[in-house]
Image 1 (spheres, rainbow, N blue to C red):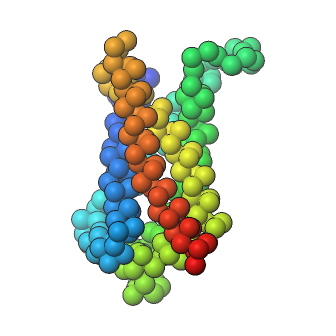
Image 2: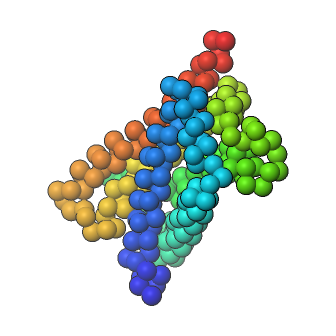
Length: 223
């Protein structure tokens, strides 16, 4: 099958799953920033996206996207290393014009996986999972603002999130324009444009995400 056996097909799958995940991150970042204006409104959003059938279906779809994206990343990484063979040890100097993020996408992906595990444990497992299974405090499960206050007023967690989000920014800045290239939408004219768009979109997403731990950390420090 072309999408599985062809290198171009595998890159296309990486691109399409990556693009879908970027859209999710944009939505999630806009949802999160609501808490800075109204914790009640944020909790209303959490209730809407809680243990409802559409939220559960969306969660399952998101899990599939992440799984496929990671699986294809592993396949492409090992495929590229095998294709280079011993030549990968021949270059010891930094390649001009090659972004640091483009050479370390797999490492950045592992950083994001660590971030994902932490985020799922601290929020999803305490909220939607509890609502679905009733294994925990169901009342607090619907109170997303409580968990944000609980974690992001602790410097260790807030700073950890900020650092991991920086890694996500590097991953996105390369991933977005790379996806467009996989779709055949990039040429000499559009490549610089897609890179600029990637930087802008990535910065918006990460700035919105970072704003939450930063604001709550500041609140904790000033009392």
